Image: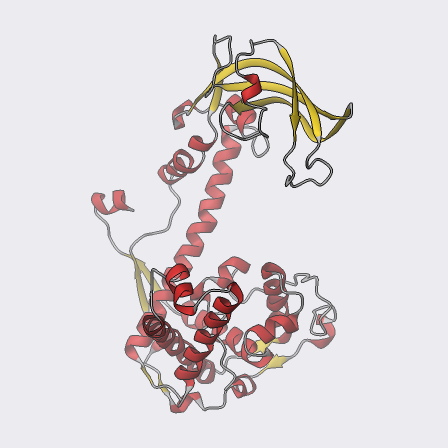
Length: 400
């Protein structure tokens, strides 16, 4: 059997969200010289039929799946409207932005002490010559944070605001830059002032604050609000699509009958277990120790690991067979140019050296193409769904 990993490219598993949506028709340069690149897309575009796609398996899926009646007329009720509100934008900014971008305010303190935030200008020189990356102006340094090399922060303790000090220091032998590792250098540091951080409230934000603290990204409050709103709209839309897809798969699974071809589940379980064992061997760790270290949330012994993998693959393989049945029932076909664009995106995003490396990792080109078609099958069903939003109470809205 060509099965390698279950539900490889199903949208509900999140991969299509990462790459920009289900069934996108967009050519992306993978950086690969693989023979199946999309450079001649216009001349080589073909349609691959359902019958051809399903030849990737060594069984007839229609003999193992009985699809629920009227599966192309499902209803999904969402618990949320997934609409971006002003309150959602404010909550995002208060939670993920303001605490991490405090405003600094100058104090009247004049002598640097441990724990102070000191605004400094500094120039680093090696043999009298300024070296790359060793200078900055207006930098806020917390004394005692160990942000700089040993001796830099301690050397400023006791300095007066407005003073300039020379720090004779040595870079560590294991420093990242070979040019600086182990080298004796001089940092000339001017103490501009001692400041304190203030975390603003949402209502306290001003254009000046945004420009000074977030100037690399925004120049005004309105620009920041617009960007956060656009980000949340995209994020919410992805979450909404994922919620609909998950519900559809649950309904398909609950209303259909699925049995496994002989050996399908067992071979997939064995494949996953062997991969984990190989990872343990490569790490030089005993298999059960590896499980206890990296899979402790799911298993701590070999038997528990096999049970966990079996349970996980049972559901994902059932979903996969269901979508293969939809491919057959709806006679889903795919465009080779769309498929190759998707593969190029995947190869580029996950850093595969070539399309062939990607195919080898996931069971071969035929299987990946069928998995892509399964994704199209899921999209076909989702497009036919009637979506409603459950009425919510004030308490529900607050919890949301």
